[in-house]
Length: 440
Ligand SMILES: *Cc1c(COP(=O)(O)O)cnc(C)c1O
Image (cartoon, rainbow, N blue to C red; front, side, top):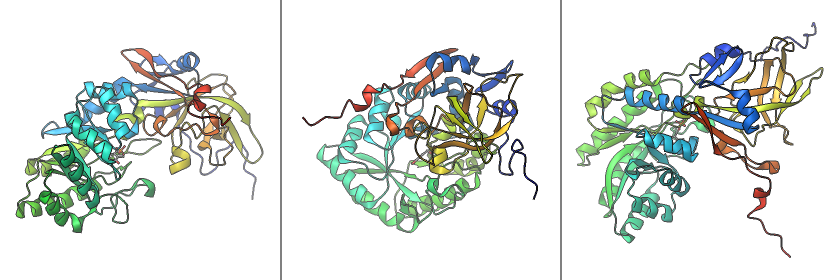
């Protein structure tokens, strides 16, 4: 076997043409070799705000939201942004102003959307373990619907509603048992998953719901997984849900809305997700026949590619076996690669003429964990101090950040109307132990 020269990419290496990659993401473009987001140079923002730093584009989020409302304009609909994807108040406020509703999963997210100025009548409450106090707050606020995941939860919501003298609008999250063909950790619509009520049990549980005194049965809900690239699993799920809707009519239960959840995928490296318009085309004939209000709960597809994580190359460690680039972001800032084996784009913020020869690098953080990597086998020309942009970082990025290794969480910046606004300051080290007590 001939030795492979270290500079040539290994068979599994990922080579991204940065200019082509940026051109595929609406918020990014190279201008004279400098990576811009909405006309602002990202390396200048890295200098101004420091790194690691999340930067988001309000225009890209707005465009992604409008793509949904335009594509589904021919049916009554409400887009409920899944708050868990990115819950910064400025982003929630932006989406609320555009008319978005919200899909929340905790009392904390309820408080956030209310603080951001959301219209509670456009909020749906999902999640497996809604707490009684949170149910009471959501009822008091007047949310649109509780998406109920179990019989025990149905009884709990009925009881809480009775206690405070309110009626609770509910829909059942049914598990259509379709294979979303996505990563097992983000597939939720198979019968072995913990989510929802099985197709077989659904009619019986609906009858039970209808018999409870403080519930209004208003809808049906499903959410089959995340980062789905095809429309087919959604169409399969819709067909299963329509079967149930028709069976419910037979027993006198008439629903007002159908909620198809979120889950539409995005391009991270070279994925070719179905567009929102194509996705709509697939579903609209059935939806028009149904004559019900449509709810959708997109998270990732509204914000992922509206954001980057900026990180500075700290130390280069080339070796005969492997080249490591240690950067100042780490798994505590962005856990998707470690948690889901997710591949994310990594591109330079400046294309220089005197670039180093390209090598195959693992982009790693400085945390004492072998799993602390942001990308593996990337062909890049790197020098210490270069600022890199990790693309697709607007969803499931900052929200999953931790303080592991006593690392303050990164700052967040939103570009809106041509100006970069700090929407969350970088945490201070002192703030990390503010809630801790030394026993004297
Ligand atoms: C996570 C989740 C969503 C959003 O999923 P995306 O893949 O980010 O679009 C929507 N609804 C429910 C119930 C969820 O759990």
